[in-house]
Every structure is written in structure tokens, then in C-alpha cells.
Image (cartoon, rainbow, N blue to C red):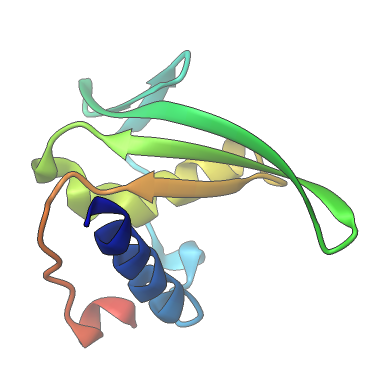
Length: 109
């Protein structure tokens, strides 16, 4: 069930991703120490995995971060932008803490 939910969330985020412009996303308040991410000094996400794959004829690196409390779920896209600025060639995934999805279509603009 958890894998089905996670797949749904990733599919939903992927379907929205083409219309989200990271240039309009703020990373203010985000920082990191080691593999932990902080928002305004409070731990908001931890790196859970680094993956290396061969995809489309090239080596792809991916880092996955897990939100530590659902109050930080709204920062998922901000975290992606922050980490892309640190590791621009890596794919970044953020696993939400919340167990229900409440993303409206206007969130994808």
C-alpha cells in the first residue's frame, strides 16, 4: 500500500513538474549540515538514499530526502531547488511525510 501511495505521489508531482518553474521558487531559510536539511534552523529533511543508475546511455545520480514532519511537506519543491543548486547534475526526490495527498491543480502552476 505504501509503495502504491508513493508511486501515486511521484506520478502526481511528475505530472505537475512540467509547469513548475524553479526560478519562481524561494530557497530562503533552507540550509544544510552534512546530509540533513534545515528550514529556519529546524531539521526538515534527511537524506535517505543515494542511487546511481544507467539511464538513457548515461550514468544518473539521484538523492532522496525524507521530510521529517508533515509541517514541512509544503517545502518539497523548495528542497528540490536548493539541492539542485548544490548538485546541479543530480536528480533530487523528496518523500512527503503526510499520508494523504491534498494537492490542488492550482498548486501545479
